[in-house]
Each structure stands twice: as C-alpha cells, then as structure tokens.
Image (cartoon, rainbow, N blue to C red; front, side, top):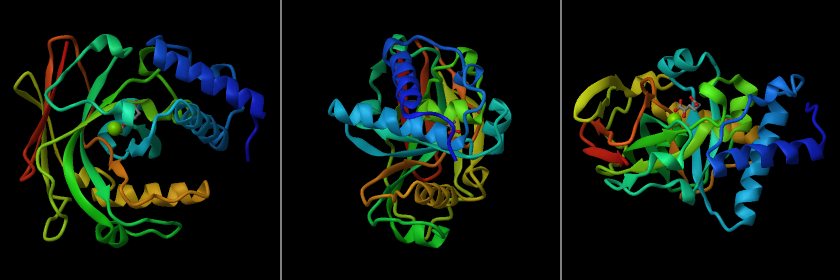
Length: 263
Ligand code: OOG
Ligand code: MG
C-alpha cells in the first residue's frame, strides 16, 4: 500500500536530496505527511537513487541500519532498514574529510561484505549469504541524517536513504570460511581512545543475517542483490558524533583497522 501520489514522492525525494547536497537540515517529513507509510518511504528512497543515477552516480551496494540493539535504542527506532550506497559516498582511508561536507556526522563500526554471486529472496538464508560472499572487511560508516537533531521515525529515516552519506573500508579482506563472524571483536576508537566495543553477534545474531534480511527486503520491492555488491551490515555499537580534528578508527579482530580523519 502507498498513500502518496507520484508528484509528492518526487517532491520529497528532491527535498531530501537537496538537504543532503546543501548540508542543510530539514523537518522530519512525516510532520507534513503523517499518513505516509513504509511503501511511500521506500518509493522516496528509490526516487533519490534514480536522481543520483541520472546524474551519473553508480550504485555500488547497500547498507543495513538499525540492526543492533545499541543502534535501535540510540535512535528509538526498532526495525532494521536499508539504504543504497553511491560511489560518491566512498571516502579514501586515512584521508581528511571536511566536516563541512556533512550536517552533523557520526561514525559507526561495521563489518562490510563483498558478494561474488547474485542473491535473490524471499527465503534467503545465512548459509546462502556466506556461500555468496567474496570477502568481508572492517568499515566505518559516516551517517548524517538530514533531519534536525538526528530525530526521526521509521518512515522518515527510510525516505532519507537511512542517513547514508559516507563509508570507508580498509584493513584486510578475509574469506568467511573458517571464521565465526558472530564472535569477531570490534573496537571503535576516537583519537586513539577506545570508546565503543562489541562483537559481530550484536548485528541480528550474526552479520550475515543482516545481509539475508536485506536480500529478503529487496525481494519485496522486486529487486535482488547483484554479485559485486558492497554491503554494510549495520553498526555493532552506538554511533559517535565527530568534530573537525577527530580521528576515528575501527579495529576488527584479525581484520586489521580502518581510519578516517575529519578536518
Ligand atoms: C540510521 C542509520 C543507522 C546503522 O548502522 O545502524 C545505521 C541512523 O541512525 O541515522 O546506519
Ligand atoms: Mg550504519
């Protein structure tokens, strides 16, 4: 079911993408469109994706969000969601990213997956995800809600492409064979100080379960996950706000570390 007309979806997609491009926060869209539902929200996100592709951006994969209790509680939204990743969101490891490129950025510690086979739902399982995984690696996601004070509800955040704005991958790539991603330890440091710690199991019991849920949600939209997709499985711990001068590092057990500096 959806409640919005095509013209309203196009209007909201432009409104939210302009907020991103101009680094200007906006009111949560459900204040003006309280009847909006889940289907409308993904329709707005899909329209933002179409706008970016029209301008020559390439979709490199997806990110899952709100997949850990820490994140659900931090944001007050308790269902996993997804967003798309454009090639323009990639930030080079160890480079200095100007905070002025964002509204109010936060960093998250995540495990990223690269797929080597197409995955199609419904009914996609953890085993199918592991068999289709080329490698995993540590990642920092830079999230930046377009909404004032990062305050949103489920429908608003989905329409806003799940707060996607940047990601950094690095450390080492590793095959999943012989690795238990649920007990993989992860540390999120700011300026060399360990601030958040966790393990893969924080993400829906196992990070691969997050990818399976993504594939099953994409199936509801008539879409699948193509081979060669990069997928961020969701923050293991709470997200941390960053300021100019901050340096964020994610260390993942046996997978090295990934760092980004903010200027
Ligand atoms: C929504 C995106 C959450 C994650 O990893 O949980 C997310 C938000 O908190 O702004 O990326
Ligand atoms: Mg995230």
